[in-house]
Amino acid sequence: MSVLVTGGAGYIGSHMVYELLDHGEKPVVLDNLSTGNRELVPDNVPFVEGDVGDSRCVEDLLTTYDVKAIVHFAGSIVVPESVADPLKYYLNNTVHSRSLIESAVKCGVKNFIFSSTAAVYGMPEENPVEESALLKPISPYGTSKMMTELMLSDVAKANDLNYVALRYFNVAGADQKGRTGQSTPEATHLIKVAVQVALGQRPYLEIFGTDYETEDGTCVRDYIHVSDLAHLHLLALNKLEGEGGSSVYNCGYGHGQSVLQVVDAVKRISGVDFEVRYSSRRPGDPAALVARSEKIQRDMNWMPKFESLDKIVSSAFAWEKSLLQK
Image 1: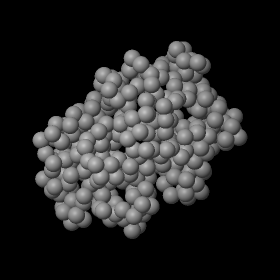
Image 2: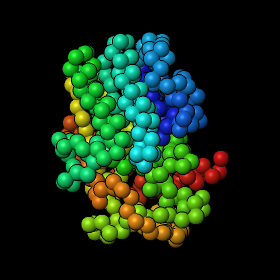
Image 3: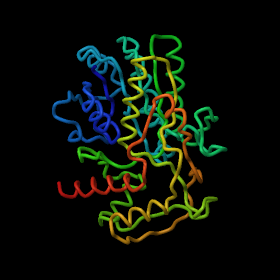
Image 4: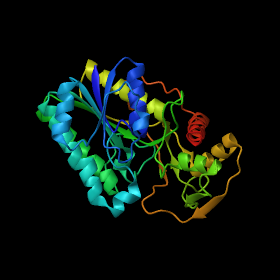
């Protein structure tokens, strides 16, 4: 089956491309390379440099490759940037997604998987947070993703389209075979940044806030290995192909680690006692954000393979070391 992967030259998208290949599917990649890396896409996978908002380009791809499903990763993801430049996020994440959804309907693509985010919850009143929790995003990034979820819900009711929206918590780690990983030079993900500090690529690690109401005073997040996340997309695709029906799911393990726990793990696995500096809280950072994951485990019979923090950090460390050797 041909599957269009938008943003397939990016971090999570490239893992999805390999997941599809590993299971005998036929991915087709569309990426504008604004943050993606062409080298992360295997040579035997059709690749087009273009934008999801270009309906002519998208519809040509959908018909040329007889695409049966779309997995939509393309978009902007940095929360502070979204606050500083909200129009960029409403264009990239909402307006362009609307165009992509319209192209899917026009070309008869019936299955759509959307890369959403836990940022749609904002500051949840309860942790772990479940899918039925009130959506109250506190950044344009979260709002732009929520708006796309709403569009998908409305379009699915009016057309022959089924979708799964996957709300990611904190994605980290890298492909176990070393084929792909987080390659954005200025990435802001904690584990990548901490590993880069351990490898001497950054001078120190900055921690924002040590006075939260958590066990050690630092923020707690639910870190999910990117390979487990990619497999969840495949399971979602199988679900749509089989029983159909639209759904929304959290993507996390149901337990969290604090910033200091992550730092300790990176220091232990790297063997480097790097410098850590402490700063005040960043606006909009919830003290804890942890997924209720029972729904996705039940509906998709999901058994995570890389759940431990050590596995996540070890794979991220191995990937960053490999980048230094290129």
